[in-house]
Image (tube, rainbow, N blue to C red):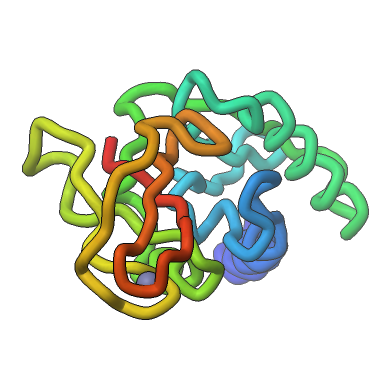
Amino acid sequence: MERDQEHIIRKKIAGLLHEVADPEIPIISIVDLGMVIDIRPENSHWRVDLAPTYSGCPAIDVIPILVKTHLAEAGLDDIQIEMEISPPWSTDWISDLGNQKLLNYGIAPPNGRAADQEYEGKPRSCPQCGSVETELISNYGATPCKASYKCLSCLEPFEYFKCF
Ligand SMILES: [Zn+2]
């Protein structure tokens, strides 16, 4: 395949992947989450490698289907989607933009790097008012990857995306 043509197709696929939202947090794309590992031509087709966020996440089975459907709708119907489990995905892979989007959505983003700590951390501050006075309500929120917190300043409950 011509290098120029290859570049154009890769860019097109990357752009389309930016439009695939996480089913649980619709404001964040799978690219923001750091799930897209590789996009490359392989034999006569293109292959996209994705990292599943974590094995307990119910969205995991749905994401490859969403990706395949979205690419097919754009005319790219011969794409192989592979889930790569090694090395395991980490919240460290969420982009700065992704963390900002989480915050804007009212979810406290992972605080610190999972690689640097033994524990799941705690939110830096309340996503609503910015207060650092927060209290853990439950280690498991709406999904196991999040914890429920309450702000002691504005009293709003919020979710914290744990580091792992
Ligand atoms: Zn607050």
